[in-house]
Image 1: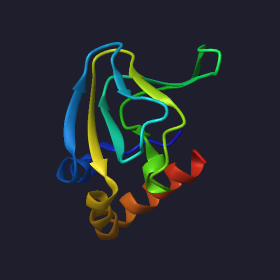
Image 2: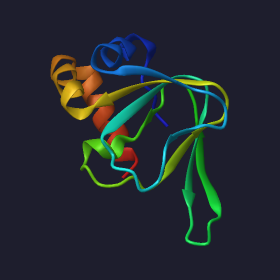
Image 3: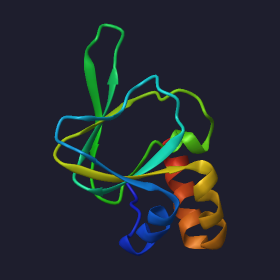
Image 4: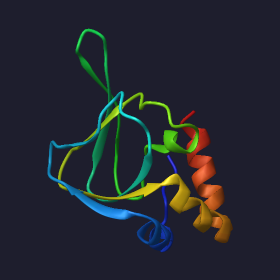
Length: 121
């Protein structure tokens, strides 16, 4: 899985808001509206799906440089998975409207985000 390199973190910092999550806390839940994307700056997160039986099924564990919540770029539909902090996690949450100008400014950022979005769909 591709990651956002450290030299591009500055664009997320300019477009978004830093957030911290202690271990085992929820970043977002399955079914919520997908308004933001998140760059994982520190720590690891677990992406999981909750089946109709209530059983949680882990999809993957992701770390620093990972982009999560990319469904916000495709539509404002509800999220199909949940994300929780495995350990202490720091993210930068960005709305689509604030991120697009930076994607237009930086070709590398634009191509990488679009590749990451397409890989996950």
